Image (cartoon, rainbow, N blue to C red):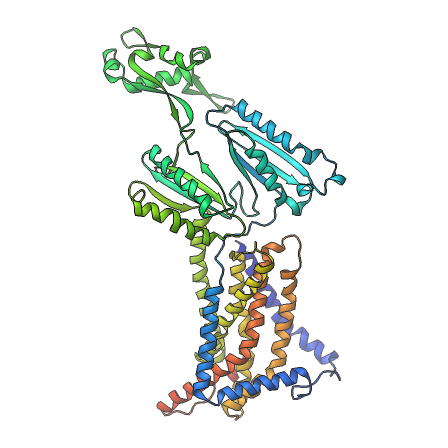
Length: 593
C-alpha cells in the first residue's frame, strides 16, 4: 500500500513532465530563449567545468589505450563497490515507528488480583503522574514532554493498560521513562511503556519480535517461556518484553475432578457433574429469547450465596436420577490449585508468546539473528525444543521475512523491464547491459548515503521506505549513462573511431549530467537535512537517492565509457567472425522514439 501511492505519484509526475518537455518547453524556447553571454559553450575549456570535462575525458582515453588496464579498472570498480555495499549495508527493518504523540503502557498485576485491586494500582500510577498535567502549561516546558495533555488508565481482571499524550507533539518520547517508573512502582506488578507507532495499533508497534512457544503441556511451555523471557533482556539490552498471557500459574483456581466410581454408583457421568457445577457457580445458557428483534440469553444459575466461598463448592447439592440428593464432594474431589489466567492456542496448539519491543539501536533483522543464534539454537541443541515443543518467530519478524522476498522479486522485475525497454529503444541487447552497469555504483552510493545519515541520527534504519529508494535509483541513475552511450553512438555513426567517440562523448556530456544530477540532488537534499513533521519517515529514502545519484555520477563518467568501449570491441569481433561489418545500431531508432 505504501509503495503504490509513491509509485503512482512519481510515475504521474514523470509522464506529465515528458509531455511538457516535448510541447511546452520547445514552444517557449522558440519564442523567448536567448543566448546568454555568461554561459560558455561546450568547447570552452577556460571554465572550471570545461577543464574538469577535459581532465576526465583524458583519464578515460588514457585507460582506454590498454586493454588489460581497461578490464582491470572496470573489474576493480565493480568488485569494490559490490563488496563495500555488502559490508556497509545495515541490517533491515520493517516499518519506521514515526514520532506519534501517544505513549502506550501495559501492566500485568500480581497473580490473583481482582478488578478492585488493579484499580487501586491505577490510582497510584495516576497520583505519581498527576503533576505532569496539573502544572500550568506556561511553567511545564522543562517537564518531560512539556507536560501531559491527556491520560487514561483502563483496568481488567489480570491486566491493565494506560495511554498518555504530551503537550508538545514532538516530545512524546520523553514520557516513556516517566511512565515506566510509575508502572514499575506497583509492588509485584510487571509493566512497561512504549511510544506508539504510526503504522500499527496496540503496544508492540512495527519494531517488535514475537516469540511463540508451542506444545501440548502448559507447564512445560511455561518453563521454556520463562527461560526465553530471561535471556531476551540479556541478548537484546534495552528491549522491553511482555509475556502473553503470563509466565506463571499463579491464578487461584478451584478444580473439580469427578470420581468416576462414586459418580457411577448414583447414576452420574463426568459431563453431568460438570454441567451441574457450571450452572450453580457460573451460570449456563440453556436457551434464548427474542424480544423486539433482539436475542436475549436465558441463563440458569444458582444463588450467589451458594458459591461465595471456595470451600462451599464441595457442599453444593446435586439431584441424582434416582431422586436422591448428594453433594459435589460426594462424587468429585474439589481441590484449590494454581492455574493460568487464560490459555492461548495457535494452530490448535497451546501457546505462550514473548513479545519484545526493540530499542532504537537494534534493527529488526539483527534482533532476529541474535534470538535465533543465542536463544533458539541452544535450546534446539539441548533437545528442549524441536519435537513436541517448538519456538516460532511471528509478528513483525514474519512480516519482514515475507517483505524481503517480495522486494527481491520486485527489484529483479525492475531490472528486467528497464533492460527490455532500453533494448527496444536501442535495437540492441548489448548497449542496455552497458547502461545497467551503473546500478551497482548507485547501490553503493545509496548505502554510503544511508550510513552518513545514521552517523547523525542513530534511529534511522533500513526500513521498507528506505528500501524503496534503491528501486527508484534503477530508473534515475541510468539517465547519465544513456547520455554518454547515445552521444558516442551518434559520433560513431558519423564516422568517428570508437575511442575518439567515447572521449568526446564524455567531455561534451559532463555539463548536462552535472545539471540534471545537481538539480535532483539539491531537490532531495531538504528531505534529508531539514527537520519537520514526518521527516523521520522519508529521510532514509532521500539519503539513498541523494547518495546514489551523487556517487554514481562521478563513477559513471569513468565506468560507462570503459564498458562501452569493451562492448564495441566485443561486437566488432563477433561481427568479424560471422563475416559482417559492425555498424553501431540504435541511433536512428532512438531519435525516432
